[in-house]
Length: 435
Image (cartoon, rainbow, N blue to C red; front, side):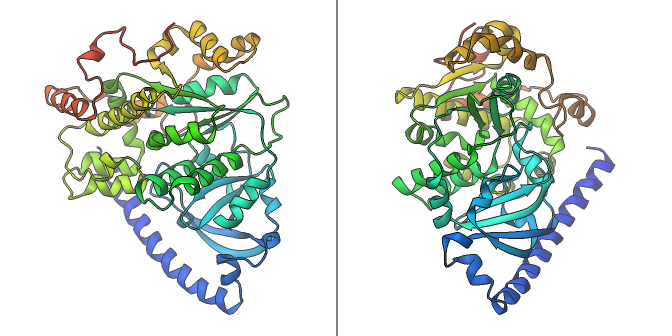
């Protein structure tokens, strides 16, 4: 890492810490004023459903980087007004995050749907924040007319071509794509790590989150054939809950050789302040646990992982093992999930496109449009595009003998195929689409 990059990282961390302190002081003083003005109680638990949406103006916003978990504290806020919850149905309002007590929406200047990353469009375009207690959020979601449109979930390994697969659907012009909504991470974190919600309550909140994400939307000129939701890799434990809540949905799992994924994540880490800390200062006590808490990681093997990094590519490989574990585990339970290997998608574009669209029940004529997505950099406008990462890390990290030893041990720990199996170019995980 260059001196300039080091200084920028230090500056970003100091700015982030100062922002946290200032926001907490400001929020404490603001809440005192809100109590005086009889706003606070209405914010926490509104008297009526008709005025349960609290609209607030954004005074300032800051995040350590674009990839840590979304939350209300990303913004410094001032009271604007209370609204009827139907305000949420506006096209420029979308679900941003869900914490233990409230659903958090943002009103944006530009459309956030169809973006490469949903969270980036939301955060940078946000002009207002709207909060609503979970009690009224559930009522709002359950008052929505039951949506008969197909829902497609693209679970994935991370850095594996899942954005490319999402773009394939987007290119048809008949799908509304929601790529990496952070409210998905929030809900999974509260269910699987914090254990705040169990059983029917967990299923209700999860289902209502997806229903609100897939609300009627009028930006597309053509009728929407499907909503396509691509969660982050952190949400893999929710695969079983996804099938329970939406039994008619179509599930894909996008993956690639875990070693290649690890190299890709290491390069992408140069565009993320949080991962820079991990890769450049790996020996800070509990740094792994701290950073994974920022990301809202929901897998128990990660949440209790407090060891140092033994190899530069270990974080990526462990993520790959975790996602493969849940994919294979849910296949074993009889859940119908279709594996999509990255190499197949780029080497057999036409065949894979037809297979994928056929599984979704899409008209054959959409294939010619969809395949155009596979000729582009699906992340071209994002901080982790191919061109951006070539500048940040011109030389990819080397795969060492030390790393391969660690990788074999991790694969055994999770009970998934290790680096020796992946040497075979024809290797596929079970139930993968084969061109």
